[in-house]
Amino acid sequence: MAATQRIAAGAVVAAAVAASLAGCATGTGGSHGSEEGVSGAEKAKPAPAPKSLVRLIGDGSTAYTGAQPHLPRAERLKPGQKPPQFVVFSWDGAGEDSQKLFSHFRKVARDNHATMTYFLSGVYMLPEEKADLYKPPQHSPGRSDIGFNDEQGIAATVKQLRLAWLEGNEIGTHFNGHFCGKNGGVGEWSVEEWKDEIDQAKQFVKTWKSNTGMKKAPPLPFDYDKELVGARTPCLEGQKNFMTAARRLGFRYDTSGVNNQVWPGRKQGLWDLSMQLVPFPGHRYEQLTMDYNYMVNQSGTATQGDRAKFAYWGDQMRDSLLKGFHRAYDGNRAPLIIGNHFESWNGGTYMRAVEQVVEHVCNKPDVRCVSFRQLADWLDAQDPAALARMRTLGVGEAPKQGWASFLSGHPAPAPKGVPGAPAVKQ
View 1 (cartoon, helix red, strand yellow):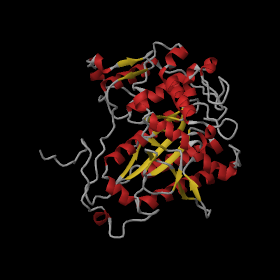
View 2: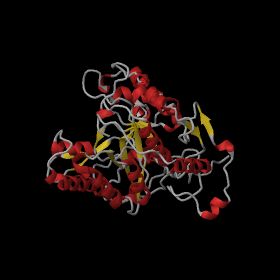
View 3: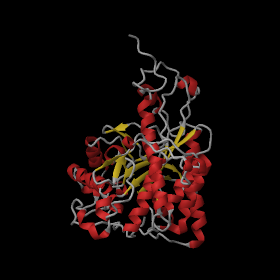
View 4: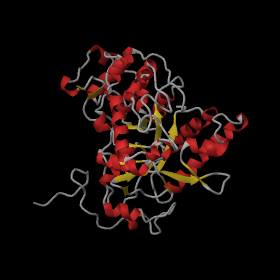
């Protein structure tokens, strides 16, 4: 969403919202990502889930509803097995406004066997009339560089968050006021200030009912304290102190850095799932895998530049990401990390580019389009020695003797509970 734009969206249909909560209560019913509800026969004889599966938290803004549906169990690679090609599509400041890009890309993901990560800005859950509840570090209460929301926008965003989670997507955080640069920007915040910002981001998600008065609305179907395991900082600033705070708060990964297309490792105890540099058609330098950066390198700070170049700029971003994908897919198989915003910069050309990339890559053999959480789960399940060996491969470098030989060594014992782990001898 634009830095100064306030979210506005149509009213949420109560029946659809109620149906989505019913879906979260069962956790397994219906088709993947369906918003249409159950068949006529099933409607005639509903099978209500046990009430114990839904436990409201706090004011009822969130709830525990059991394990997240459609979340695959991570499996350890077998000796000599070629790793899958992971691709992560993620969205900074996720929210639903009149453009309806959140709901659109949920459908794009479902249609292409993908799940994604949505980094929610906490202030998108806070109505403007209660802006003073936000006390940003180094700024006066009620200050935000991306504004706040209204009741319709919050209701629409809550609906999308609920359905996204039920489809197996991840809800992360993009924090709150999106302060960049000097004079109080996130790059100047201390560890304690970051902890306070994170606590406030959680609090706005956990109290949206109280802050809006929508007490009868269905809750978000997850415990946000447990759901929240990773983030991307505004403008990719303040990573060092944020990671220290995040580690203390139990986060599992960060994606606020810039890296080459190589296998990730841990940094300050977190998985470093930084965005990456990929080939940039028509240029000698490489380009960061984020829509905003493509825009800046094409039209500068103008979010709506030369209309005659819109199609070319979108094609350039699409082709750039696809070059990065094929370089990894045919090479070292390093996960491809992509960042986006729900924006219509330069006529929406970057949204078109992202959609085309999803359609092209997510249906290929051995490709898994996943959330950051799912990628972290998979990394946690792997033999540390095998991951260390994969990290020796350079950008686009495939093993010279093939994967079977490269990863054929004797693996360390698999972590407890990982499928394929050898039985422990008594």
